[in-house]
Image (cartoon, one colour):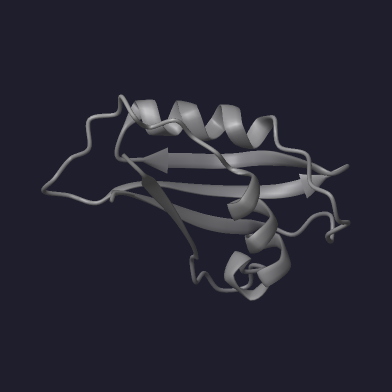
Length: 104
């Protein structure tokens, strides 16, 4: 069973969009690896996590996180908190991502 993670930048005014920074989007998408083999997907609704974060000292600082499942939220929080960013990105910018999970 394969699980796909789709990352989409949300459009909010006066904020640095994750979708407008393709290198950051690519880096996070390549590094985030969740084992969702035991996760019960909701077949009638989208399974997602929305996270607002900044990058400080090559680490993701989660400012806010919401989603359709506490399990997904906890898994993404742990994964993002342990993620080391390789490149230097502008500190103080706020990025917004929506991670959509689909069963393939």
